[in-house]
Image (cartoon, rainbow, N blue to C red):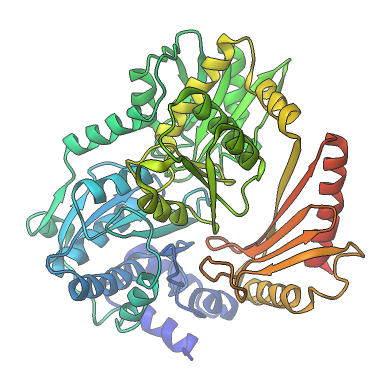
Amino acid sequence: MVDIQEEYKRWSEQENMPAGLKKELTDMSGDREKIHEAFYRELEFGTAGLRGIMGAGTNRMNIFIIRKVTQGMADYMKEKFGSPSIAISYDSRNDSRTFAENTASVMCANGIRTYIYKQLMPVSALSFAVRKLRCSMGVMITASHNPKEYNGYKVYNSRGCQILGSDPGDILEHIGKVDIFDDVRYISFDRAMQNGCEYISETIEQAYIDRCFSCGTDSVDLHDLTAVYSPLNGAGNLPVRAVLGRAGLKNLYTVPEQQNPDGDFPTCPYPNPENRDIYELGRKLCEEVHGDIILATDPDCDRVGMSLPVEGKYVYPRGNHIGVLLFDYLCRMRKMPDDPVMIRTIVSTPLVDRIAASYGVSVQTTLIGFKYIGEKIDELGDRYVFGFEEGNGYLAGDHVRDKDGVSTALLVCQMAAFHKARGKNLLEVLEEISDQYGYYREKVLNFTFEGSAGAEKMKKIMDHIRKDCRRDIFGGKKLAEITDYMHDDTGLPRENIMEFVFRDGSKLIVRPSGTEPKIKMYLFAHDDDYKMADEIINENERIADKLINE
C-alpha cells in the first residue's frame, strides 16, 4: 500500500522536477483531496497502454510516468528480442511531442534502435511504420478523442497491432520493477538523435499515403462532390487532404478554425467526431460553399464522423450507420475474394450481418477494441474485406492493423459521390437499406464516474449487475439469455462485459470503458416497424438508467 503523503513529499523534493510540475505540486500542498487524487494509485498500464489526465503525480500523465513505463518496456524488449527496435508517433495534444521524445530518449539510453516521426502523424501511420520498418514494437502518444486534459501512451506489437494476450501483463511486470526516479536510464533527445534514434523518412510517409490511397474504389469521379473537412486540430489535416486531393476532390474546404494542430482544441473541447457540437463551424462553412457532406477526424485521426445537409437540416449518421453504408458500398464496388470475411465487434450493429449474407460474405465478431480486429486480419489474410466498430473506427485495407481515418475519409467521399451520381444522398441510402433488411436501432449510453470515488462506484455497479442479474433488476422485462464475458466460455478473451438478450429480441450490453472513467451501455433493437424499434430502444434506455442511478 503506497503512502500517499510520503510519495507526494518525494516528488516535491526532486531537484530535476520541471517548473510546471513543481508549481502544481506546490499548489496542492495541504490539499489532501488533490494529493490523494494525484497519488492514490499509479496510472494503470492496461491492454491499450496508458491514458490519463496530464499533471503531477503517479496517477497523472507526465514525463516521469512516461520514462518509467518506457524503461519497463525497454527491459521487456531486451529480454524478448535479440536486436529490438521501436517506432514512435504522436498527435497534436499538449505535451505529445515532449512525451514522444522522452520515450525515444529512454529507448536509446537502453540501446534500442529507435525511429520517430518528425511531425505529428495518425495512429495508422504508426502501425504502418512498425510494419514497414519491421520494428519489434511501437508507441503512439495520444488520448484519441478524450478532452484536452488527457494524453496517453498506446503500445503496439511487431505486427502493428495494439498489444494483446500476455504482452500487457508481461510489460506491466517489468514496469513494476522500475523505480520512477532511481531506475530509469535516460539521455537528452539531442543525444538520442546521435545515438541510435532517427527520424522516419519521407519515403515511408509517402508510402503510407500511397497505401491509404490504394484503399479507395476505382471509377468514382469526385469532381461533382463538395466536401467540408475538419481534422479537429489534430493529426489528420495533411494526410487526409493529400489523399483526397490525389483522388481528384477539387471542392474540398477545410474548417479554418480547426485546421491547424492545437492541443487546447479551442472550438471543440471534446474533440470526438461522434459529438454533434464539433460540427457547428463545419455547418456554417458547408452552407457557404453549398457542400454535400461534412467530415471530421479525431486528434489521432483513427475515427471518422460525418454530418449531412438534408432539406435545410443536418443529420448525423452514427458510427454504426457509417459502417453499414461503407460495407454496403464496398460490396457493391469491389470484387470479393474467395470466402470473404468482414469483422465487427460485439457492440456493432448486427444489420451488417444481414447485408453480408446477401453478398455472400461471412461475419466474425470480436470483443470491443480494434486490436481484436487487427489480430483477426493476420489470421484471415486475403479473405479480409472490412472491419469496423461502432465508435466510428473503420478499416478497408490490410496496410495497417488499426482503424484508419485517412483511407476511410477517402472511401466516405467516394461513396457520397457514387450515390450523388445516382441522385441520392446517404440518408436516403440508409433508408433503402432499412426498407430491405428491417429497422435496426442502436444507442450508446455513457455514465461518467470521476476520480477514486467514481472508480469504486463503477466497480460496485458492475458487481451488482453481475451478481443480481437473475433477479428482477430490469423492471419486469423478461430475459432470454445472459452472457458474462468475464466468466462464461464465449470463445473470446475474458473481459468485464455483461450481455443481456430480452425475449423481444432486444439486447443490452454493459461494460466499464477501458479508456475513460465511464460505464458504457449499448442498446439494440430490431423490428420491421421503425416506430416499434424506437419504442423498444426507449424502454431499454429507461431500464439502463435505473440500473445505474438506483
